[in-house]
Image (cartoon, rainbow, N blue to C red; front, side):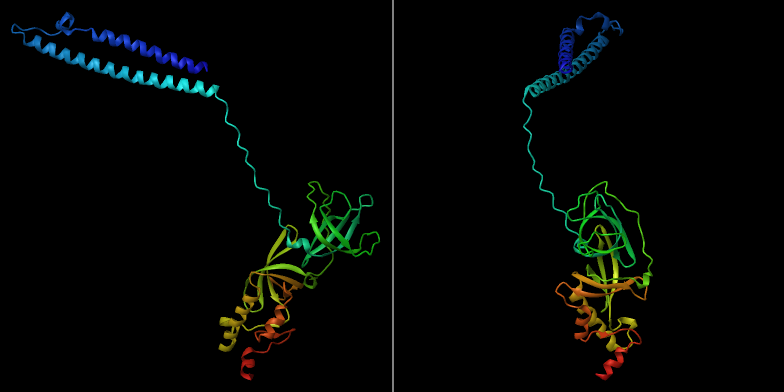
Length: 335
């Protein structure tokens, strides 16, 4: 407030000084100022005197005009300063605007992970006799295991997950016992107990996940291969190619051995796309395939349609359990 008052006083002072200068300037008479005439020699005919008067009269006019412009500018500045001062004073005394209450939309409930509804097989590694907390090595995917702390329903402890624990027939669980975890849900406890990781002695190529494991089909390849997105554990997702087990489908493009096989391969791909692409499926008996980079599994739709049996019924796949495959070209000739 004091700063604004000082600014206003400064504007008024400048205005007063300029007013005095203007008053003095307006009283100057070029004809009565002898000092001006002494600067130029006057001729007998008075020509130089007339010229001198014209020069100094013009200079005086210019000087007056400059002073007037300066005074006008400062006067305008003073008016603006006074207006700002009055406006600021009014703003200081005015009541502050009322706060507007903004109601944030309710936070959306976190969507449940598809893995949360899955049943996990596991082995009890440790039992805390005081809190009843279990350390369980869970079989989450082919040759992949997670060791986590689990609270059975009704147990209150610093567990990472809660779950319905089954498999021990009502008896007290013990280390080494096989259990199943249903509806595995993160507890949200920040300082939950994290057990040390443990890995069973297995041969990965012989490992199998019985399932069912929910998966979403991102896209289809040929008649027996799909790319899936799988929540293998709450918070853990993988993108993996799955070959549908127990069938053989015709080869596409340059891998086809005849035109009829290539044509049927296109039909098989189109049917697989219609049946599975963009949909949720269930994977059963998931295991490594003999070719690297993909897994082998039985695939069923949410409506219970077995993909392999569906393709066989459509004449777009043949049953296959290993060994030498019958040529699709020979099959076409027999028909």
